[in-house]
Length: 233
Image 1 (tube, rainbow, N blue to C red):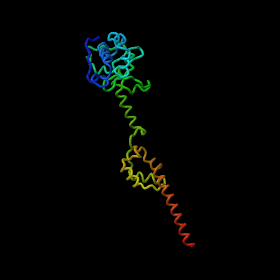
Image 2: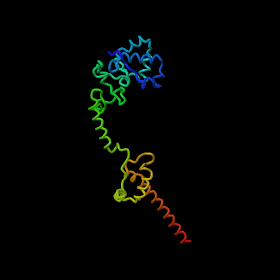
Image 3: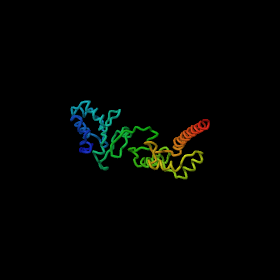
Image 4: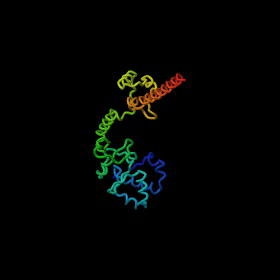
């Protein structure tokens, strides 16, 4: 095991770290000094006795995510790769490979647990095949972007497209008014981006036209009754 270890101010100078009890901070430094080249510590209980730390100190480090614990009792320093850089000719891989295989490396270099189902792991960044999975992630992202349900907004239809659709539906929706209305408000329905302009015509504009027509028919009927009443009198 190496005789020298490093600690980054990016981690130990944060409010989250400094707000911990001094005993928890001390335990963190001692764990860091005794970790292997991948940041794993096999005997945290022994180090706690050396530093006179309490169980709560370890629980705080785990709870605040400065450590990640395993059922085996092994812990790993979450920000190990941010704290330390070890040259390849000096690096010796950890012996806790089962624990290591259950972790991912985030973009900032921190460890995180792999909580996805096994069937989804081939789209994640795995420690033992980072480059291969990077390609898979990009491919998966492209496929999702091509799926209609993943679209964040629509390509606004042309006036001719709206006119043709309204003719097909046999409604009396004013196509130009429809275009002008949604162009003015950024093609939103309420506060949300419009996903299907045809559905908006069916569910909103045709209904509005029906209500307006119904109101017009009632007014016309009342007007006819007024004329009849005047003729009779």
